[in-house]
Every structure is written in structure tokens, then in C-alpha cells.
Length: 266
Ligand code: FE2
Image 1 (cartoon, rainbow, N blue to C red):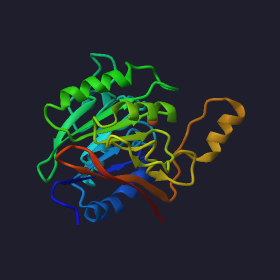
Image 2 (image 1 turned 135 degrees about the vertical axis):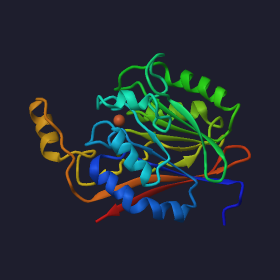
Image 3 (image 1 turned 90 degrees about the horizontal axis):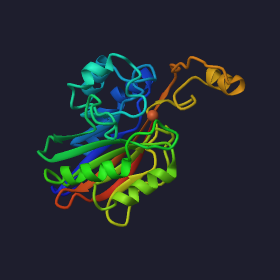
């Protein structure tokens, strides 16, 4: 039985299109019950047709039990995102955008058991638009957040495994968990790092399983063969939900456990 100084959090990997939203709707209530989760975070930057997020899609995901949505390199893909992200603190854009960009890269939320948890969203720089240094920007932000809470969860949205690992070891012991997103393929390296931070290189995708990272294979293969631009579609096939359950000690903010979750919906 979990003790009452334990905070249980679910982090759902990148939700892609309608198949991704549907599997969240079908599975999330059972996961919340099973893990006694008091906070659910999900990366939603591909939730609207595979590219970006809209207000309507965000509201739909909140209604399924998600508390905080993170994003990444696709955050601005839908032009209507700009006005609502500026006034919606439950949707994060990467913290390391230059000063003056709308929205916020971190937020604090009170869980249903009255724990204050901070969530931070950061973008890597390898094979990405080059933003401010994710390492230094996040470290400064953590120092600020520590005045309110030592329960801190980071979504590090990045392509390269080496950058994700370096970021995780740089911040080990300073935050509760660093969850990698963006590659859409779940890695099997979840663990507690030496100083107590839970880590996984990539939590994986929540979307159509028989696809190329969420998109129908035909157009993606065609693009590789011809190098011509192609419009990618999210196929309406059975979906997979990828997530992690993180168990945190509320007194020191360090992780006790991280467990991979991978559920197929037929
Ligand atoms: Fe991404």
C-alpha cells in the first residue's frame, strides 16, 4: 500500500490525433484508479490532427482527466494556438523560447490531495529549432520553483538520446522526474538516477500503433523515396497508449519508483 507521503503521478506520452485522444478517453479513468494518481500530465503537441493543439482539443483532453498539457516543437502549428495559450496556464510551451514569446514554460498546480507540483516543459537543441540553452534555463527555473515546492516534473522534448541523458544527469537530485518526449518510441531505460530523479529517455506515443510515429506509412515512405513534400495523415487504426507512473516521496521530492505503461486498444 502506498504511504500517505507518496505522490502518484501519471505522464502520458505524445498524443497523436483522434486515435490518440480516443485511447486516452477509454483507458485513462482506469489508470487513474489503478495507480491512485493525483495528477495527470500529457504531451499534447500532436493532438490536433497530428500537428499542434487547438483550444477545442485541449478542452477535450482536460475532460478525460488530464490536468496539464505540455508541448514542444509543434506548439505553434495551428495559428489559433497563439491567443489561447497566452491565457491558459494548464498548457505549457517550451520554457526556453526567447523572452516575450506568449505562454509559459512552467506552472504549479495543486493536486487533489493538496500537494503543490511544478511542471516544466523544455525543448532540446539537437535537430530542433535552436532556443535558449535548455540546461541553464531549466536550472534557473528550478531554483525559482523550489521556493514553492520540491515536487518538480520536467518534460524534456528532444530528439537526441545523448542530450536527454546529459540533461538528466545535470539535474539529477534537483527534480522529481525528467520524462523524455518527442521521438514517439518508448525506451526501456526507465530508472531512478543516482541522486533520486526518475528518468526515461522517451515515454513513447499515444496514437496509432501501425504507423510511422503516428502517420500513415504511404506518404512518409513516399517522402523518403522522392524527397518531395507530402501531406501526412493520421491513420484511423487501433491505438497504443504509452505512459509512465511515477511515485514520489513528498517530503524530499525524490522519486521512489518509475514504471513504464504500454496499453494496446483494439
Ligand atoms: Fe515533437
